[in-house]
Amino acid sequence: MQTKDTITLNIPHLSAEGFIELCQANQDLQLERDATGEVIIMPPTFPWTGKQNSSLNAKLWNWNDQSQLGVVFDSSTGFTLPNGAVRSPDVSWVSKQRWEALTPSQQQKEFSPLSPDFIIELRSSSDSLKKLRAKMHEYIDNQVRLAWLIDSVTKRVEIYRQGEEVEVLESPATLSGEDVLPGFVLDFENL
Image (cartoon, rainbow, N blue to C red; front, side, top):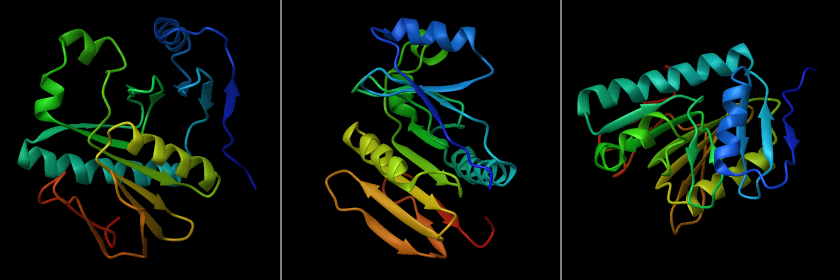
C-alpha cells in the first residue's frame, strides 16, 4: 500500500523570513512550519483526496459567494498562527472583517498573520490520525473558532470548538457552520 508520509526537517534558527525564502526557492513543494521551527514537507495528495478537497472548497465557496461574509482559501494557502507555526489547512475561511484588517502586504506577500475562523482537515487513508488531531488542537489553541476533521476512513467527523470538548459524529448526514458560518450546511450525501 502506498503511503503519504511527510518528511520533517529541523533547520535551526529558521526565521519567518527564512521560511518564506525557503518556500519561494522550492515552489514545487508544499511546506509547513510547526511552532518549534521544524519544516514539514508534504507530498501531493492522492486523486481521491484532491477530489474531496475540491468538493469541500466548492461548497464553502458557493455559500460564501452568496453570503459575502468572508474569504475562502484552498489547501495551498499558508497562515502564520499566533504560536509562529505556518499551517495550510485543506479548506479555510476568514471573516471579511478580519481579512480586511490586514495590510495589503499581509494579504498578498506573506503567510497572513492570522488564524482562519474556520478550517477543515480531510483525513485520507495514509494520514496519521494522531498527527491530525494534534494539528486540530493547535488550530483551536491558536484562535480558530470552528474546525472539522473529516475522517474518510471511518466516516467519522470530529468537531473542534474553542473552550469545548471535541464532538464526534458517526456518519453524519449534514454539518452546520453554526454561528461561525451562518446558514452554511455541508451535505455529506453529495460529497
